Length: 508
Image (cartoon, helix red, strand yellow):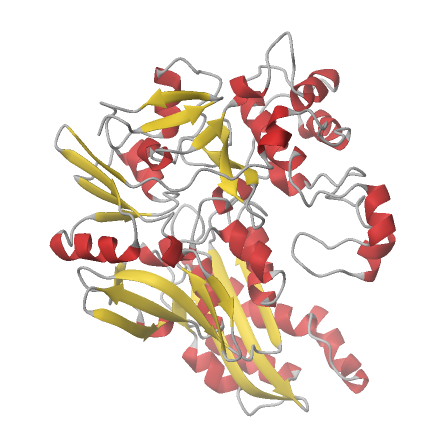
């Protein structure tokens, strides 16, 4: 198809002849836009960040920063993007670029274009509230809950500037020479977009709709079907086709391991996979809804997921990554499975034969193997209601943010009258698959929520799974982290006043 093209910085650029495995970053640089840099090619450094025009809830546009190194360029067919070159020019700097220059936020400059794009995404975020606005109207945190502290000091805290700038917007951008303070200072001095700002004005118009794409280059085919029914028919005919949503996993395979797929089916813009509904007895989340959008729409409704999302990679990754992709790879170290296992999630698997529902605890069958049959895809994730009253997500990694788990643990317990009445514990990083800690759950249910119970159950939890040693952690370390996780949960759980003596034993 000769009309396959992307609008870049206001100019329509054709994709004809581009290899189907090409990333947006490679294509941009090959077409004369070298501002975006390749730092890691894994989505960890943000040097390649660009902005995509995505739909907002009111029919307008949101400028969403993503890693260009991971996005298949054909996934941008019909879409609109802005790179660092499109923000401003040396003679007419964008406010973000101007503030970075004034604060000395750039030395070698390698990371600066990516920082500028991520900062611009936050600069144009509609919900960004200044200290003055928040004081007048109250403020809600990024993760939904409005606390007394946030109401009294709503915008300016350790991670938000007086202008409402959320530093987590830069969590996926790494700088190796300037240091982060001048970059933060630049971010905190940004005002609001001017009324005549072209990118601000663009936000009042609809974002591009998803284009139906079908192209073959050098024998490799890339398809974006028009709807779910067409997708399922394609999968029936081509069961070996590679399904790609956010491409935060496959993009790494392409860049680092030279992976090439003869047939790619892009599903990230299928409306049927981007839904989120909250019913009386279940929450259903579309498999291709980006994590950032899930977080925004749930607005703290599921506390366990609200704990998970800020620790899941970076904002740049969450703007593209999906639950369906995280589960579809079958990886034993994905962050989402332990939390979803603790929530008792079920998966809706769809094919031309219809739909079936599978317990997530029965979905994984081996290392990167699942019960998903040829021709099937994950349509949705269902979380049963009501939710457990005591939940927590523990992630053990070398870095607090933007890192892969050594161990991940999801807890969901009901404690009534000081007794554990129900327990679900999901584990990641300690076996060939994510798994439920059934033995530990049985050791807790029916027992008092007390130090003796915790100690007995901790010994059982320590032995769950078959942890191995690798470059992230040793098997002994992983087992030790499992053994201490219940004590950590217990120490953070409110208990009757007469248990204060027991609580001291936790820290002893």
